[in-house]
Length: 166
Length: 362
Image 1 (cartoon, rainbow over the protein chains, first blue to last red):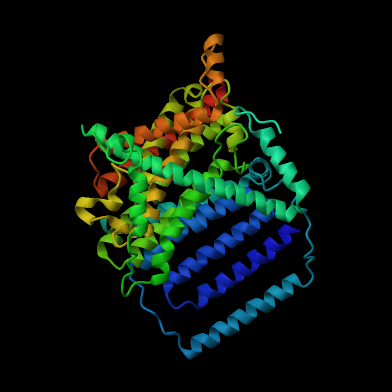
Image 2 (image 1 turned 30 degrees about the vertical axis):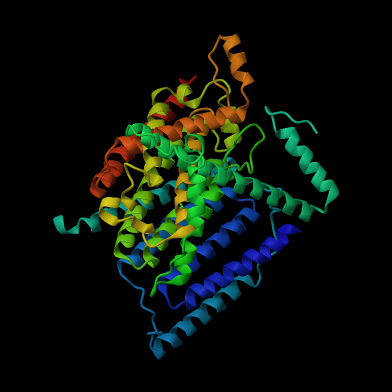
């Protein structure tokens, strides 16, 4: 009962803040709306009984990535209000590509059964113990490969940072 | 309604049952949330007032002064007088600043610390919410305060504020790693992230003793990193008075300044209580194996007194740091984290995992 109201509240909040992020004129307001959207999605994870995913979502996106965005906006001094600098051709291109994405999504989701396959009150997969077991037993190889991917990205970042001295 | 200062579980359950019998479930939930919120607000105000007083007295003791001694006996009402003064001050808003962000920033900082305190166990059954991933939750929400600090520095439209906020951001983002890794060392030993189970696991001995040397190293790392994360001296570069006037809160006055001030002290309280809970046994009494008479006397002291005593001890340590060590430079600060604390922590986790695998811990 109360979770249904929470679901509608969080969905409206997520959609509202995502739209406001796109149409805000000031970049720093966009960053804040993006944070709000991340929080709303974190709330959805908690409704699905995926506490670990929710908290990691908040640590990574609302914490670390937001700080990076804020740093970038502040260091580049982007506080000037922009009056839609895009050209007409760019706008038309954006509309066409967005519409094509929507067609693809509809084509994929048309036959998909949207009804919930797991009852969030019964499924325990989102709890950290079960998630750890699944990750390290059933999906060990993809998990480790993705960690190698992160390592590669880190090494690449260090290399780019030290470019002058090589 | 069974009431005991040693175990609040039955007391809380009785209230819960009475509310759900009297009201429809949605309203019962709302009433419960309101009660908990009011209790925390009161607790917040009391702890804030006490910590400011304690800091001034400890500082005075370190510097061979008397400290506040005019308002009330030993000056104990000094902070209340200061708070009334702050309430009466004019709220200054700056021209050409982003009004919304300027007014929002103190609230973000204080909400972040308010969210963290909900997961902390104060005693047996005295626990607002017992997450499956309590420690991770506290790490997550306590790192949100930095968004408020960055916004405060940015929207003040003042170069000192901006430099202070930037320093604070760099500092918190880097020291968060060490806080997380040092807590992870103990999570490996405890085998759980739930605060109630972590405290239960220390019934036979605190983790700082159970985990041999790695646990002690993790404790020291946690103290250093959390002192830096709360922007306290010797890591208070964000508000280094001699260089930046007051850092990110230079342009704030009155009650908004008080919010930043309160949030700083509450963050200190939160990290101290995490240290007390994870390393020093939380509300578990101090026991020595074999001394049954001594253990019995220790059991007689209520759990929340143990918890508050341990937290006060860690807070005293942090105040001791602040008034003893000179402030670091920004490059020294980042070198300390990335070249010393982080590698030591990573090796420490491996050693702890090895000890737990071999079953060498107590």
